[in-house]
Amino acid sequence: MSPTPSPYRPRHGGKKPSTTTTPPSPATAAEHPATELSGADGTAATDAARSPQTQDAATQTPSHIPKSGTAAASALMAAGTMVSRVLGFLRTALLAIAIGSTTLMADVFEKANSIPNIIYLILAGGMFNVVLVPQLIKAAKRPDRGADYTSRLLTLAVIVMGAATLLITLAAYPIIASLTLDWTEPMIALGAAFALWTLPQIFFYGLYAVVGQILNANAKFGWYMWAPVLNNVIAITVIISYIITFGRYSAADQQLTEWTAQQTMWLAGGHTLGVALQALILLWPLSKLGIPIRPKFGWRGMGLRQTGKIAGWTLATMTVGNVANLLYLRLISGATATREQMTEGGAAIPGEYAANVAELIVLLPHSVFVLSIATVLFNQLSRSMDLGHYDDARALINRGLRIFAIPLMFSVVAIIILAGPLGRLFGGAAEDSHLAGAAIGQLLVLLALGLPFRSANFYLLRVFYAAEDARTPMLIYSVVSGIGLITAYVMAFLAPHQQLPFLIVGLFSVLHLLQYVLCHILVVRRWGGFGLSSVLSAYVRAGFAALAAGAAGALVLWAMGGYDWGFAWNSILTAVVACAAVGVVMGAVFVAVLRAMQVREFREFMEPVARRVPALSKLAG
Image 1 (cartoon, rainbow, N blue to C red):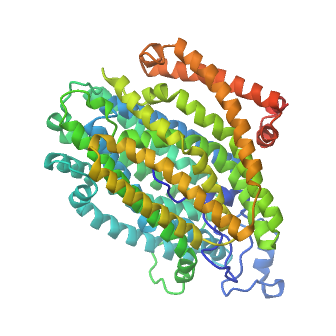
Image 2: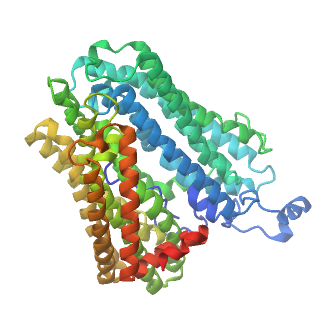
Image 3: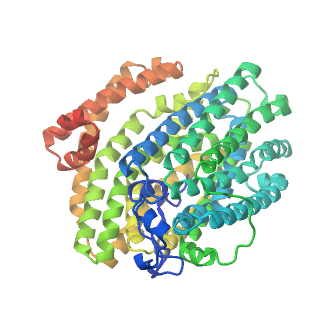
C-alpha cells in the first residue's frame, strides 16, 4: 500500500565489510549464484589446504550453482511467479463473489488475512531473506555440506517463529482492536475470530522463508517460487467450495448478524491451510538434498550477530515501511465502520479490501516491467560503483529511468481509461457490484497517478544499495513515512471516515512524488547529475503516445457502455471482454505512435523482450 521497502536487498548493510559478500534475493541468486564467498574464517581456501575429497569436489559444479544453468533457473522462477500472480488475481475475484468487495466481511477477512504476512515481515522476514543465503552457501563448502549449520538454523527458526506465533495468536483480540478505527464490539469480535485462524500463518511464512532459502543456497530455486502456486490453488478451491456450500454474497445479506463460525473456519482456516502447505511442501525437496538435517541446539558461533549488523539498516527500513502500512490501513478501516451504519449506498464506499485490490492491480506493471529491467541494471550499477566508474553509473541511472517511461506511461493511461472495468473484475457478482467496481476504479486512478514516481524512486534507491549504502534508504523511508502518517492522521481528524480511503490512497501518490524528489536530490548531490532533461523528454514522448492510445481506447470503451453502466459493467465476463478489446486497441496505437516518432527508448525496451520472443523484434522498427 504505502511507499514500502522494495524486494531488493543491498549487497551490504552499510559500509563495505571486508569478508562478506552479496546475499542474493531469489531473483538475483538465479542470475548470479556463483558469487564467491570466503571461508569460515574470512580467508579464501587454497588448493594446498584441500583434502583429496575436497579437490575432487572442486572439479564439480558447486552446490549453489544450478546444474541446468542460470538462464533456465531464472526462466523457471519467472514462470512460477507469473502463474502465481494470475492465480492470485483469480482468487481475489472469486473472493469478491463469495463475500463481496466493499462489504464488512471483505474488509474483516482482508484485515485478518494480511496481518500475519506484515507481522512476519516485521519480526523476521528481512533477516531470513537478507542474511541466510550467504551463510548457507558458506556452510555448504564445509565437509558436512552444511548439515550442522543448516540443522541449527532450522531448529532456531522453528523455535523462535513458533513461540512468536503462539504469543501473537493469543493476542488476536487486542491486535484487531488496535489496528481498526471505530469498529464496534461485534465487528472487533468477528475480526478476532478470523485472526485466531489466520495468525498461525506467521509460523508457516517463517518456515517457508527459511526452508526456501536453504533450497536456494543449494540451487533448488524452482520449488521456492512455485510453492505459492499451490497456496493459490488451495485458496481458490476453498473459495469455490465456500460458494457452493454457503452461496455467493447478495446485497441483501446481513453479514454481521448472519455470519456463522463455520463460515469463518471455512474461509480463514482454508487460507491458513494453503499457507501451511506452501511451506510444508518444501520439506520434500529439502529431504532430497542429501544433507542429514535433524533438530540441533546451540547457536553460538553461527555468525548471526555479524550478519545481523550488516543487515541492520535494511531490517530497520522494512520495519518502518510495514509499521507505517499497518497504521495507514487502520485509518482506512474507519470507512468500514461508517459503511455499516449506512442504510443504502454503502457499496460505493471502499474499504481495506478495495484498497489492497487497487494496489495489487497498479503494482502489476511495476513488478512485470520495472522490476525485471531494474534487476539487470542493478548488477551493472553494483559493478560500476564498486570500480568507482561513476560516469558509467550515471549513464545507467539515466538509461533505466528512460526505458521505464515506455511501460509506465502506457500503464498509467491504460489504468485510468480502464479503471471502471478493472474495478468491476473484482467487484463481485451482487446486485450492487457495479458500485463496488466503481469504488475500486476511483482508487485505481488515484494510485496510477503516482506510478511513474513510485518506480523512479524505487530505482534511485537501488543506486544507494548498489553503492553498499542501506542507511540512506532507511532515512528516506523514515522521513517520508513520518510526513505521511502525520498528514494521514490530521486528515482522519478533519474528514469524514468514508472519505479516508480516497484521501489516504491519494496521499500515497503524493508521497511517491516526495520520495522521488528526496532520492533525486541525494543521488545528484552524491554522484552528480544523470541527465534529467533526457529522462523528462522520454516521459513526454512516451506520454504523448500513451495519450493517443488512451483516446482510441476511450472511444472503444464508450462504444461498449463503459461510461454509462452498459455492457462493460454487466458482469465480470463483460468487463474482461471490455478490458481485452480496449487493451488491444491501445497497445496497437501506442506502438504505432512510438514507431512513427522513432522513440529510441522503445527500441531499448524491446531489445531484451525480442531476444526471448524473436517474433516481437519487428515491433521495435
